[in-house]
Image (cartoon, rainbow, N blue to C red):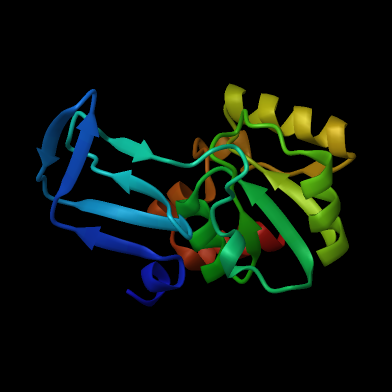
Length: 173
């Protein structure tokens, strides 16, 4: 519960969608709002036809408002769930809206002024590796991935299947 509050993730009971002048109310179990910034939201309703809805754009980074002003290491990862798990493991991170979203040079300069080292930590699948490679080339960064032989693609799944202690050991390696 504390982790969800830290990252401004809250359960909701319903969501009203207005599209083309029509109103639809979604009332499913397990619906959440992610407050990304003032007036900027992502809604998760995993059992609805509207799994993800948001008014985010490429300039909104998940976990950005929870960063310290300066630090040693910043990981750029794929999703807020990974940002939250990495914080639990003792690492600061942010996530763009997609692994394919570019990061502007001006935003990267801001991050590089705040953190001594920045690394990309995307999924170990084709979109993740491709997105990480593009960012590494564009911004002269290094990347890390979960080893393929684990058959687990991201840190939140690693914790789910192997636990926090094993994930902590993996991150130190």
